[in-house]
Length: 276
Image 1 (cartoon, rainbow, N blue to C red):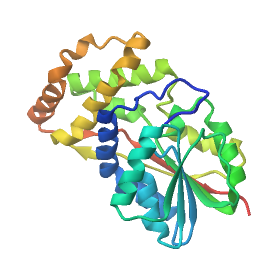
Image 2 (cartoon, rainbow, N blue to C red):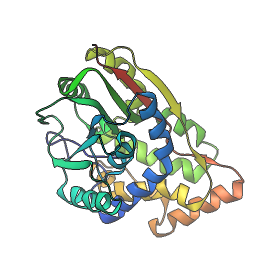
Image 3 (cartoon, rainbow, N blue to C red):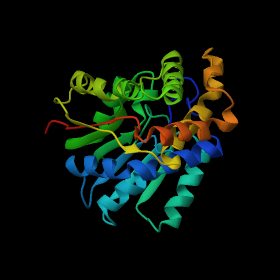
């Protein structure tokens, strides 16, 4: 997940090293779904692409490989520490076609148009995502693509009901999101929003990764860890989850004992092209 704008509250998940590490682990898991979306949206070698809310740079690096050395990726991120780490990772990967700019997402300036704008888990945190999409449209060439991945929590919560502790963890995250102004249904909401900002009805798909190993379930238990300060700020009680020091182990024990898999948050991929 990426960052929010200067006009909103502090980014819900914070900028701790542990959250940065969680974002990288999460990105590794969902990279194939993101790559499929971007390929379907037509991102190809030579394209100039804007990555909104770059975070640790994972989406930017994925796009950099799609556009190749003749293409360019410009990542927008508000947090200086995140940019510093993203730049280190880009350099370590040997990528020379990626740059990062510290900016509010509503104040992006470019002297030439982009072929596409992309983002993952970013619009859900913005107080006015429609205005951001309108701003992006001004930066995209006619016929260019806009492609985002955002969540839908309704099926996520429904599928968790059979596992009491897992369900409580998800419910606590969801309630914290709602009380803090985060939109957990940003994915399906984009169908209407794209059309309201002047795009055609978008192509959409929903994918839900399944898993049962400790690293997979840890993506969610670490997420609630990052959200603790925000939950306290908005009076979301986490007492039902018990000791946070053992939460990950107890969740994993519940999943293992049940001999089942659990879902990661369903990801809605949405893309459309600006009118020629």
